[in-house]
Image 1 (cartoon, rainbow, N blue to C red):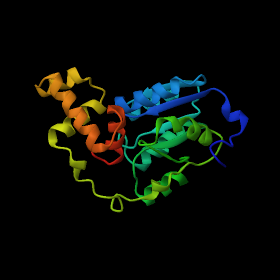
Image 2 (tube, rainbow, N blue to C red; image 1 turned 180 degrees about the vertical axis):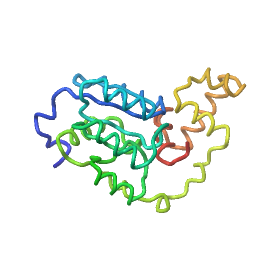
Image 3 (cartoon, rainbow, N blue to C red; image 1 turned 45 degrees about the vertical axis):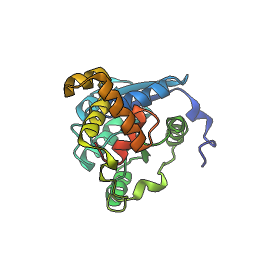
Image 4 (cartoon, helix red, strand yellow; image 1 turned 180 degrees about the horizontal axis):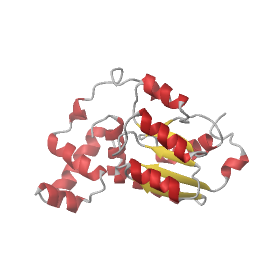
Length: 216
């Protein structure tokens, strides 16, 4: 089934839970989906918070699950989310994963993997595809970390990596500058350098790329 060949029943209002501790990424994805007329989006930054949302809210249609947020303990946690969120579809929202882990997750009921570097404009079609009952796996989903090209921090120095981590956590340039004891202009210069080295369009895209490459 193609992304455009989706049953009409999947084109109804969709309830989405984004479970990711990097606020910049979660907020960017939520903002894109909320701009569409038929999405209701909730975010959470830890496994306990996600499970609380699942218990308290009316049923979600889909859960985008980050594997590295606080509280996650590998496959056991994934299985817990799948069981508690049912009948919602659960999709791993992450970068590259080991092939055996991905297969085990799929066997446990996970409905695919959405890489964080996916263009935001493609999320709507992929989410609808999964909600319609299909499994979504990009071609790179089964690459192991050993198979992936070594990035050597993508040329980022330690200051740039720290700026990137803080930005991904949702801090503003002013807050990052205060945390690092430098001027806001310095942080803006760091962000420009980070985006150039990563080939990112903006800070949100840089955060997504860095998570995909396991830089932060």
